[in-house]
Image 1 (tube, rainbow, N blue to C red):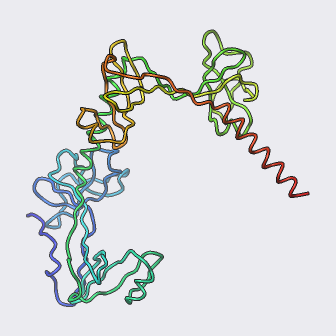
Image 2 (tube, one colour; image 1 turned 120 degrees about the vertical axis):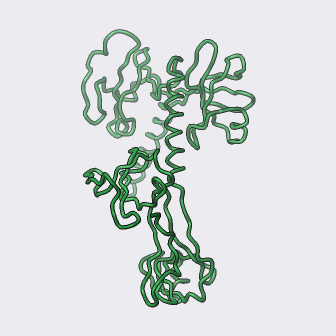
Image 3 (tube, rainbow, N blue to C red; image 1 turned 180 degrees about the horizontal axis):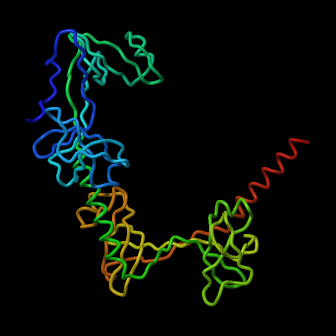
Length: 330
C-alpha cells in the first residue's frame, strides 16, 4: 500500500499534527523515509525505512557507517528522492510550518528580532523566532519539494564529464603545472613547499632541477613537506609564476595543454551563453573547457607574475611598519 500524502486537515480535533520536514525516497512505487544517505555524492546507496504499513522492506540490515537500520538501495533504482517541508505566510512574512493544533499553526520565523517581538513571537535565538498563529490568519500554506535525485544525477554526470575530460587531454603536453619557478646561480628550479610558511621562515626549498641530481645540501623539512635546498629569497635572481593564455573566436581562455594540432583551455570570459552556443563543456558552474584547432587560436602567449618583486615590496612594507612601531614605543 502506498503511503498517503500528508494532509494538514486530516487530524483529530485538539491533536498536534506535525508537518513533515524530511527526505523521502520512492522505491518500487512506494514512499519511504530516508534514514541516512551517508553523505550525498560519496556513496551510491543509502538506507530507507519508516515505510507505509509499518513494516520494514525486505533486506533490513544495520549499517555501522550510515548509523541505522534499513534497506540499502542503489540510487539508480529510485523512482524519486526529495526533501519536503511546509511553509505559510503571516502578515506578509514567510514561516516554516512546524505543527498544527486545532485552529492554531506553530510556525518558525527567520528574520529580524524587532519584527518578531513586535508581532508577539517568542525569540528563540538571534534571527529565529516561533509562535502559534491562528489558522484563519494564515495564507498560502503549501508544501515545497527539493529534487535530490536530480541533483545527485547532475553531480554524477559532472564527475563522469570531468573524468572524460582528464582522459581526453592526458595525451597532450601540459602547459600549466601549478608551480612557481626560481632562478638561483643561473639555473631555473621549481619551488617546493608552502610559500606562506616559507615566507614566515624566510626561506624556501627548491628541487626538480633542469638536469642531474639535487643540488648539494638537500634536506628534508617537515613543515614544508619535502626534500630540497633552503634558499633565502634575497639570494634568488628571479622568482615567478607563469600562465599561458589565448583567444578563440574573440573570447579569452587559459591554456592547459597542447599538441602540434590542437590546444585545450579553460574559458575565463563572462558570457556563459556564448560558451554554450559555441559548444564548450560545462564541467562545473565555474569550470568551462574546450579543445580547439591551433589554426583557430589567436594571441597565444605566456604571462609571468614577478613574485620576487612582490615579496621584496612586502618585506619593505613590513620593515617600515616595524620601524614605526619601534619609534612609537620610544
